[in-house]
Image (tube, rainbow, N blue to C red; front, side, top):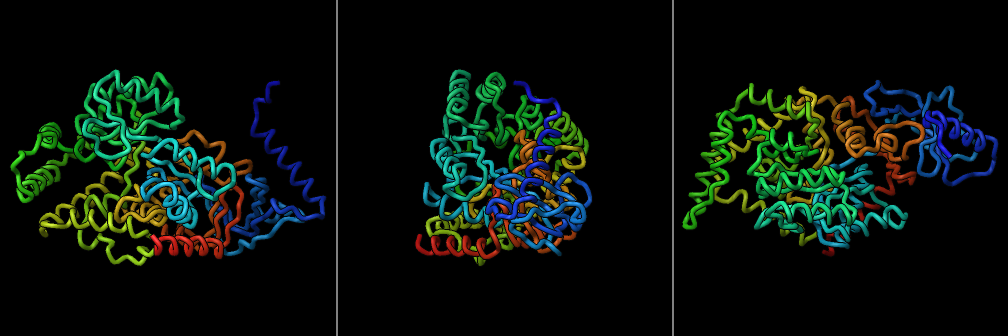
Amino acid sequence: MSLPKNRTLVIFLFLVLVVFAFGSCSSPDSALFAISHVTVIDGTGAAPHPDSNVIIHGSRILVVGPAASVTIPRGAKMIDGAGKFLIAGLADMHLHLTGAGEPEGSREFILPLLVANGITTVRDMGGKVEYLKALRGEIDSGKRVGPQIFFTGPYLDGNPPSFQPSIVVQNAEEATEAVQKLKSEGADFIKVQSRLQPEAYYAIARESQREGIRFVGHVPDSITAAAASDAGQSSIEHLTGVLLGCSSLEEELRQRKLALLPAAETGKQTLARERAWTKDLLGSYSQQRAVNLFRKLAANRTWQVPTLPLLIHLAYLTPESDRSGDPRLKYIPGDVRKNWDRSREELLVLRTELDFSLRRQLVSRSLLAVKGLNDAGVPLMAGTDSTAPNVFPGFSLHEDLFYLVEAGLTPMQALQAATSKPAEFLGRTVEQGTIQAGKRADLVLLDANPLDDIRNAQKIKAVIINGKFLSRSDLDGLLAGVERFAASH
């Protein structure tokens, strides 16, 4: 039997009938609740809708509309939204659920922090397929509360690979096999890494297109950002290749980066080479090259996930951006903290004030690039790369929203980078990303308006995740549980 073409109208009429049925029933329904007199920021870019009623049943939003015209059914649980603000559930589009050990670390540490911070969707950008599928199954079945999970599985990288888990891909045949393997295992995307050589990279691009699966990740050191965009790479992470693509010395700097370091080179010699390279990168910025690159990325619709918390608090680490004394370390298990401490020490040791000055300039240039990308129409998404050192799961997404605004996005655009834009990228605009009837009940209730100050998105009163209502008390309980877990690990 074929469905009517206007599926949205059919769904809406069905929902109205359901609400009418509930309204005529006096018995309570534990799956039915309403948020009354709330200001709805629906994520479409429209102005906020004050004094609205939102009715939810099970995992779906039934009705959103003015309180004066939307009657709350009898038997519905009431949540007073007066003075509150409702946004769609947030998405972290770059993290690693296996970054704290598996499976216990993810279940007891990462997932609760994500939920407590209003994150209802994630894109895992590098992990073991079997583990991620098991974790997703637990969440989808209701056994565990957590965000929707989309994942890439292992990285595809050159030899030796940058990180684990990786599949080493050195030629077209290996690239074809790797893409087919990950597609058959259920990966949502293919993740490319920095050490891939051109033959393998372009074979990944061709096979991904044939298999109907998008490839995402780093721009390999051997490839330009423009070439990656033309090859069909769907998203670029961490601005890899972007700043280099804005340089008038792009090819020279690329070759210098690819050059093997002399075996006898000391740490100080390596630092001197890095310092000279960074100076030349910053000094060779070309506005025209930046404009040309951003136009290409926009035309090809090559999405960007800058992961600004990673850049500011790790890649371009300075003493003032370090997190060694952050009170949120109480949520980080001891073994993870040890790894963080080692990474911070490696990034700070032997560095001079000149090095830190260059890193601050890289941060400024990265923020400038984000503004240029946004102004050019390149689609942006929020992401963190947690649990990388100094990048706190859950909390860092709010930092990313703040940095996006610092870069020049409006608070609305920053919110959309974590709501409607991820839904568009995932091909799930019918299901999520905005607050509309028929969509998943993934919502965050706030005590203050995030459009006045994006930091207000951290003032969370409640989270509704796939229709499950979690009060402030419930969220505090999740945080307390993480703190206990961290103290014992």
